Length: 121
Image (tube, rainbow, N blue to C red; front, side, top):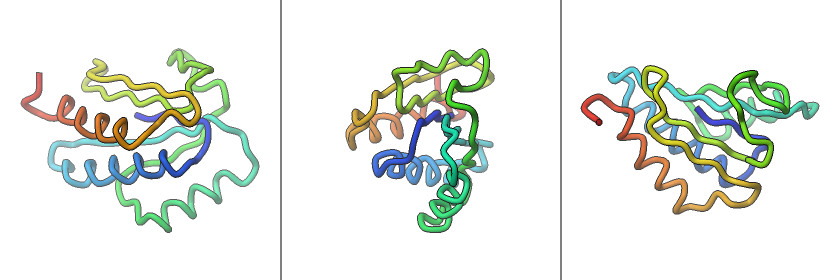
């Protein structure tokens, strides 16, 4: 589960890697989605174009209000929040202010995907 305030090249890189991980783990019933916390006009079209351009297959892109879904406590300071969970239990949580998400962070998130797969502790 990813919450993002806006699109960026680093977010696109993360989304592509999570989409690939989701495809690889379909048999494990892994799912992934990004909720854009943004009311920007034209965002829906921008996201459809992103899906087409990047060839995304399994990850779901959605839009919610800028405050985020009620009860999730998404930080107002976080531009991108990544929560990896199994059966409502959080296994890894990463949050980044605008411009902070780097390639090493993306690799750490992808590595943490193993924490939500069968056989992990």
